[in-house]
Image 1 (tube, rainbow, N blue to C red):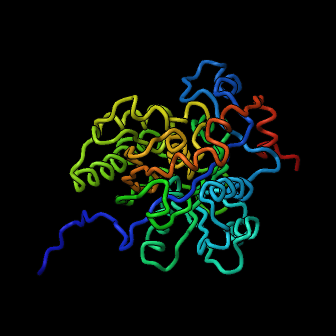
Image 2 (cartoon, rainbow, N blue to C red):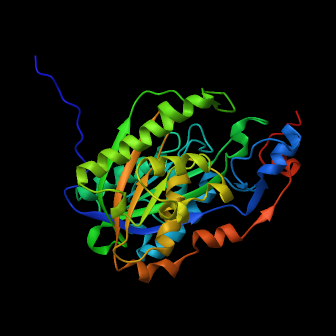
Image 3 (cartoon, helix red, strand yellow):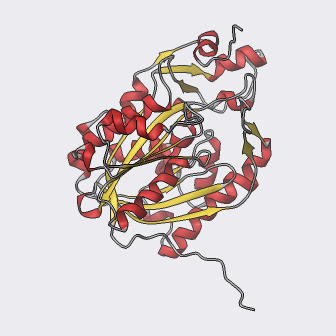
Length: 358
């Protein structure tokens, strides 16, 4: 009987691909973590972040995806009709049966000659769509595909998740490497059945395995994906200018970075959890957007996402000279962070439907 060895083959498309355009959207409303602690813990709870982004009454995954997509198109300098796929990853799609992706495609002018679909894999649904886009473009089935990660994340009132579960979206257009502002050199995915976080059908709020979410879930998968890819490429943390990790809070990505040999300076530009929280499917790729906003040609970037359930996608990315021509063509992450309106818990509860009148 033949024994099959585990595969550590990197995901590399037949045709070189890269990021042609990117864009984000972060709601303006901010709920301070201290305000949550005031309501549920008498103001004495440990605060995992400073504050989180909260969607307005008229905002959801669709509206945030559209805004991020428009910003990505502006940076890519292509027409929406050139997109042959639009994929939206989220765990808070507005409809249980009706795609988010077709509404986004219609709003940005990409219909009807395009493929569309919704993706799910907890917090790594956005990078899952990026990997699929790499294959779609890399096989020459299409020249451009758009991958979006967007969430209006939920947390049960008073639960630990409520401090960090936030909202935001990021869109990436994947295209041929020759027209890219950053090339994607390789990707590697690592998944296991680790039930650290879940929500069953008709259940309003997700459940989580408390400390179980750390060691066997987040750290095992992020470090395994990152270290396996780096080893296969023959590189170390010193070969990268920047590194971005999924950010369920501020401490987890800092610890994962240290385990892989990265310094605080390498992860600081993409560490946004303290000021916007954890917008689930968009967390890691909003961090990547923040780094691209300041990156210079030839900068090398490590991106590692994480999705509960559980899995991680790792990417090795090199910035091209095109970055300097496109950074200022759309609003940057810092622009959205600076556009801030603070709210109290009562306003937050009303906006997020936590107060039911019937």
